[in-house]
Image (tube, rainbow, N blue to C red):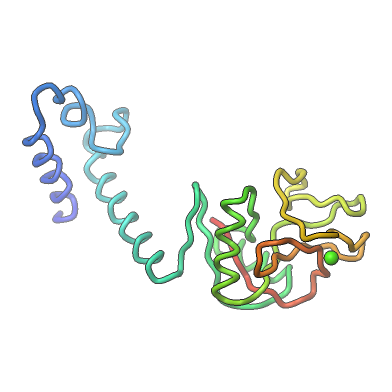
Length: 183
Ligand SMILES: [Ca+2]
């Protein structure tokens, strides 16, 4: 029960220090960060869970095992395998192979590649039409960061790798590349 008691005490302390004018806020309606619509009996346990997750994220980030940007988390197992094996590993872990959809996400994947000094396959493959690249669910790319003169495989480089400068290259799928997953 200790873990449940602590957030309640914390809230009590916050309320204690809060003026009457603010009593219509968190002290009466819900705990910080917890929607008011959640049953009050569940609010303290939820706050406790949120705090513990935040601590775990901090530890994993500190040790370089977790990279976060926006709502996504990226991580690598440090292993180099081909595209299909990378994809499968990420899926088995409950995520998917890294698929940066904006510059910020691309930069986070880049930071992982720089740390390991390896290239990685992305969750992008060539569609039925040559030189048209798609996400793995078949939808068109909303972001790309092709290297100069890429993609140049013309149907012979079905996968896409990211270099250690963040730029993309279409590449055969059978090379060994660092597995980077997103969650
Ligand atoms: Ca290429």
